[in-house]
Structure formats: C-alpha cells, structure tokens
Length: 141
Image (tube, rainbow, N blue to C red; front, side, top):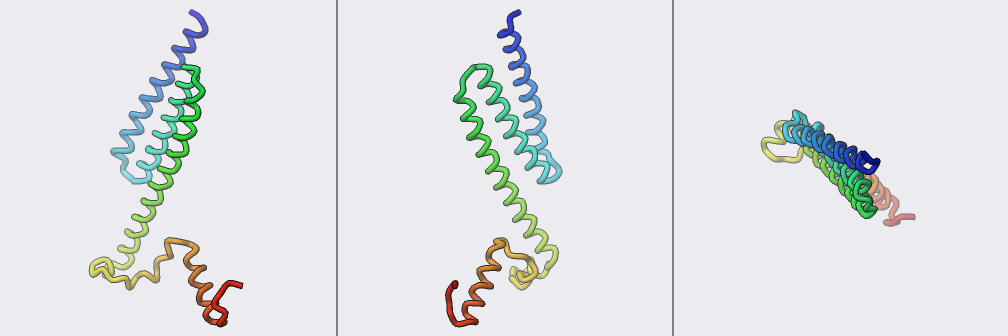
C-alpha cells in the first residue's frame, strides 16, 4: 500500500465520520428541547461542513475549495448571529408578556417603560436631543 492510497482511505474515513456526526447534529437541531440547543447544533453543522470542504480540498489537491470554505465560514457565522438575534427578540417579548400579562391581553404598550430599548444607542440619541433643546443651541457642539 502506498502513502497516497493510505491518505485516500484516511480522508475518506474522516469524511464518513464527519457525515455521521452531522446526522447527529441534524437530529439535535430538529428535536432539541431548547432553542439554544438548536442554535448550537446549527453552528456545529456549519463547522462540520467547513471541515469536510477543507478535507476535500486536501484530498483533491484543489486550493479553490479553501476559498469556498472561508466564504462558507462567514455565511455560517452570520447565520448563527441572525438566529441568536431572533431568539433574543422572542425571549424579550416573552419576558415582557410574563411581566405584564394585562398588556399582552389588550395589546396596549403601557409596560414599555420597564423593558430596555432594543438599540443601546437609542437612549443616547434621546438624551442628546433633550440636552440640545434645553440649552437652546439645537445641535451637537
């Protein structure tokens, strides 16, 4: 057995093992008891896909696949950030509904003052506009 044949078996075996792990992650992403489990499973699916692309790049001796893996890594990262952002928004809404059940029933916004702003910079812009109107200059110095 030559070294190239042995490396072919090694790369093939590694890809098979990674695909089996991907099926386990897919199962966790579908059946996960918590949304955090699902987000981690989706992140791990992306990481395993990147690993498979890199192994294929070594096996086939094609360097362009490494560029594909880098692009896929950026897309996977953005997907996890978006999923986490959506989850946090749903969680905040759920917590607000639990804190003020009367507001959730009639649809009023009376409990809005207890919930922090979604954009952390919005508090600064509101404060700056109040200061500008108080001193009469109306602008940023």
